[in-house]
Amino acid sequence: MSAVALVVAAGRGERLGSPGPKAFVMCGGRPMLEWSIDALKAVPEIGHIVVALPAGVQAPAGTSGVVGGQERSHSVRAALHHTLAGDPVLVHDAARPLVTPEIIRACLAGLDAEADAAIASARVTDTVKEQADAAGPPTVARTLDRDRLWAIQTPQVFRREVLERALAQPHDVLAAATDDASIVEAMGGTVRLVESPRDNLKITTPDDLRLAESLLKAR
Ligand code: CTP
Ligand code: MG
Image 1 (spheres, rainbow, N blue to C red):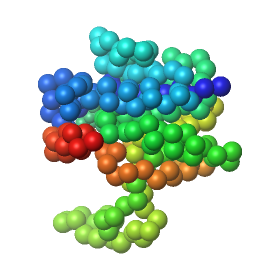
Image 2 (image 1 turned 90 degrees about the vertical axis):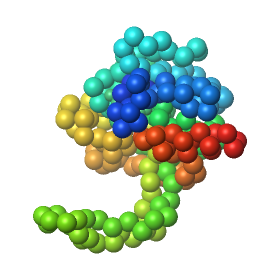
Image 3 (image 1 turned 135 degrees about the horizontal axis):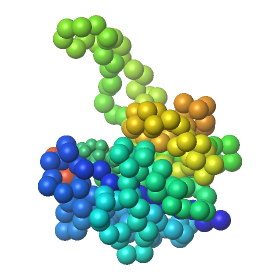
Image 4 (image 1 turned 180 degrees about the vertical axis):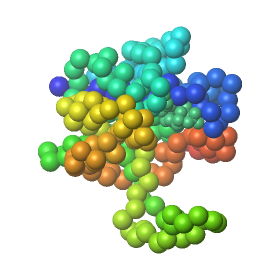
C-alpha cells in the first residue's frame, strides 16, 4: 500500500503578521505551500496528498483539499479523516518550505518494524537550560544534556492505526500538542528520530521568512 501525505496549511500566521494565511505568503517567488507540495510530489512512495486549508481556499493542483480545524492537530485530523486508505501516513507543516524529497524519503525509511513513528529532527547545537518554577526574574533550574537533545521538525511519519488512535484523544489533549508525535509518546509509542538538516526550518516570524528566502535562492 502506498503512503499518504497530509499537509497542514490552515493556520493564520499571526506571528508572521501577514495579511492572509501564512501558507500562501510569497516565499522565494511563489506561495510557501507550493515548495512542500513539489517536494512531496517528487517522492514515488507517496500516492496521495491531502492539504488542510483555510475555508474558501482552493487546493493546489494534484492534491485534495479539506477545511482545517481550530488547532493544528484538528487540521491533521480533518485531513486524515478525508483519506480512506494509505499507510504509513506522513504529516508535514506547510510552514516548512525547505523540506526536500531526500528528507521525506529518509523519514519514510526510518519507520522500522518496531517503530510507531519516525520524525525529522536536527541535533541541538546550543546549550539548553531549563527555567526554574520560582516567581521573579527567569532563573536556571538545570542544564540539559545536549548530546541527547533534538529539535523536532516535520515530516513526521506514522503507522495509520497509531495516528488514528492518537488523534482520537480528547479535544484539550489535541489542542495542547505542538506536534503529533508527542501524543504518540504520551500513549507509550516508539518514536524514532531521523536526522535532518537544520535548514528544514519552520517559518514563524518575518526573520524566518527572510532566512528561508535566502536559503531557497542559494539552492
Ligand atoms: N495549522 C493548521 N491549522 C491550524 C493551525 C496551524 O493547519 N488551526 C498549520 C499551519 O498552517 C502551519 C503548521 O500548522 O503550516 C504549523 O503551525 P504554525 O507554525 O503555528 O502556523 P500558524 O498557526 O499559521 O502561525 P501562528 O501560530 O503564528 O498563527
Ligand atoms: Mg500556530
